Image (cartoon, rainbow, N blue to C red; front, side):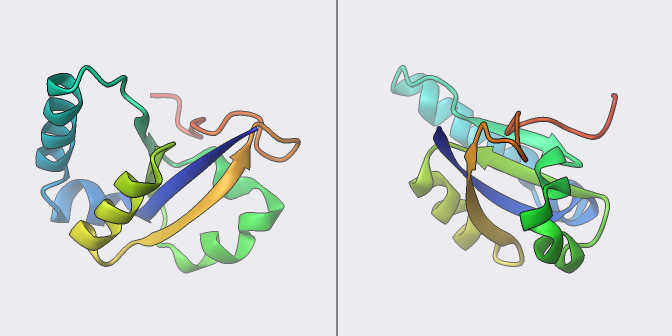
Length: 108
């Protein structure tokens, strides 16, 4: 199993109220300069929130939600500091309750 770290917020906050596209461009450029493989994913309506262990967290986050999911704990902490008003955490996957860590409930 792999540990995945997430930063969670409402889609409106993350994608409209914050300059999140700028954050993603900066991070992508940083990875390219270091020949590092991308280890982060923007997930709209993340399916992991449907796992029973996330019921309390899902209730705290305005819906529809969006999450930045990564395997890089430092990036997760950096995002939390950069964005402030987000929920941060981690989970192990794949598991019975989270078979795909970056699955989305949206079809688009």
